[in-house]
Amino acid sequence: MLGIPFGEPPLAAPVLLQHNLRYVLSTEPQKRAEYFRALLELTDLDLVRQALNRAKGRVSALPSLQRYVELDALLTTAQQNASASAAVRRAGTSSEVAAVSEHLMAAARALVPTVTGTDAPAVIAELQAIRARAEEQIFPIGGLTPATVEAPPAVKVAPLVESIRTYTSASHKPTSRLPASRRCSTPSWHTRTSGR
Image (cartoon, rainbow, N blue to C red):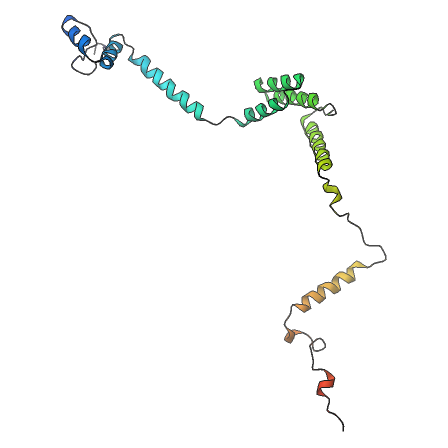
């Protein structure tokens, strides 16, 4: 009721008096430290310290934000170029999306001087085109893809396609459903009787 926090017996009250001095001096060190913490009202500070340590452990266990992971990777790539790495660092410290985009575009222009775009989609398109050209030089896929050639105008494609459809649909039908003209018949030489 007086606002004095009581501890565990035998010294429930955190008051150092003559009759409990012998207990304080003869008890084990851990209990003595707890008693003096209670006497000096340090238990609340210990609780706060423990809560902070738990929170620090939880925060350190969280995965890194993807944005910062990607910016660190970009900073590693741009470390040879001073202006590009400075722009990446500024992007990492900026909190506004427009400022981050502007710093990243500046880094792209510093790393690849041929990039001339003024907005993010244009810069992204240019970088993707540069990457596609570089990949084509390493492994030319364009040489492996066949060129589409149109049929000459003299060839009528529609009747050809229709006859192929008719043939393929008829070849999958059972023989009994085929018209009589298409059924296999016994050869005429087999049914012919000799006229001797």
